[in-house]
Amino acid sequence: NAGVTQTPKFQVLKTGQSMTLQCAQDMNHNSMYWYRQDPGMGLRLIYYSASEGTTDKGEVPNGYNVSRLNKREFSLRLESAAPSQTSVYFCASSGRQGGEQYFGPGTRLTVT
Amino acid sequence: DQQVKQNSPSLSVQEGRISILNCDYTNSMFDYFLWYKKYPAEGPTFLISISSIKDKNEDGRFTVFLNKSAKHLSLHIVPSQPGDSAVYFCAALTYTSGTYKYIFGTGTRLKVLA
Image (cartoon, each protein chain N blue to C red):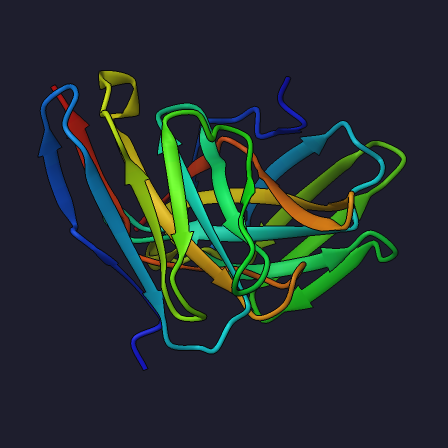
């Protein structure tokens, strides 16, 4: 039982490049989330998926897209990376809406 | 506008003593409050939560107190141990427009000195 896994752990992109951050959970959770963490800013919600087949914008969705591929997997895509997207990205899942969240180990992304 | 605030970026406490981490919020419609602990290079892990209808919840060395009139909650760790050194985030949960959303504070870095 791995919980929530994220790949890659680290990534360096040039401005304008694209990439997809992968997230998977093996806890049969319905809800999944993507956050970014910046110094002094806490965790800010980018997108979330309350259940398979649905996705909604969070607090800071601009520049990102998501796909809830199936119940296990929720990916985050940067179509044209910008230096402002340099951050640590966390994926989380929850067994029920409103329950505690389980977080992955994070992806540290640097855009130069 | 920050709806959940942790005004102390850092806190140092001697091993064995009490650690008190504070969190203030502005929205009286929050349903639940949660505390998460985060070690470097790891994701946050859930620690303890409290419903907005309660004023205290205890789990081992960890107790969360909620003062609704002051819109303030605190996490008490007694006794503090070196392994408690981490960043602690408080989070508030609200249900609006058919969706649950979590709002996180900026975190407090706790250092427990041996």
